[in-house]
Image (cartoon, rainbow, N blue to C red; front, side):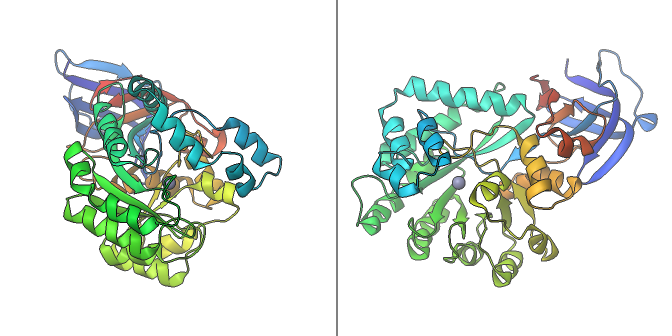
Length: 394
Ligand SMILES: [Zn+2]
């Protein structure tokens, strides 16, 4: 069946506007019509009708910041940190990002692929139809390129749509301590191959203890020259200038932004850089990005789970939306806009994702509630049905 009618939608939410008692017509992989049920085009022969049972329907959610290409886990370290172990104690005991780099490098390709595939299945089942996914736990040329290829292989109906981000500047890898500049020189030469392997974007962890603005600029400008979209982990631990760099080079997004000041808001707004905020990470760090000032300044917000092996196993954007309301003081509408069209803009795919209207990809979710307010109440509102490009995948 190529034509599907989502009928008996209790409430249809898109881009901050809601219509009660609605219908959506899907033709092939795209939305053909959406609006009040009373105005819907007449039924056609052979059309499949899905009764949404009065539920809320929204665009599929977009997770705009994740680190899912890793092997192993760090649960013992997380338990130790919860009992007061410091980051340096954890690092001295062989924990931290270096532990994940070792486990990821040691993993058999099939094992790593299976782990990533299972994570993506969880994202999709929970109503996230687009996931930005970063490399960054191999930190060698071949390993980083293999991670890009792995992400590309997972683009299939059983996985969400994936935006693959090449992140060789995630940390200074083991063996390069004291020679970060030389490592950056190496990584710069991998950009063209990463683009050829299927990466969409390039990213750098521009922060205290990681990479400087100058090092990050070198990678991101080389990546842009190779056709990759730049994005920046910016001003999370300290205000070192990542947001200003994002504005200067025209990055698609600046992410985290826990330490930014008004001048940074102005720079991001002026350059049209999307602010990708990760409320779970903000909660864990005990610092909040100035979400209201960003919105007031005209900056588009996106949201990310920041899924990573050290601090977040979240694969449910419905929880991230609830956290955005609680931690960032956004309204439910603002949080959902950030989790749909905002995320699509951060990934530069908003021409066909992030809203429910004719011509857009039919990435849709029927939620187990009749109203979007349930997101801020359920702390992980379950998806009842998920469509990816018009195909029902849950
Ligand atoms: Zn990150």
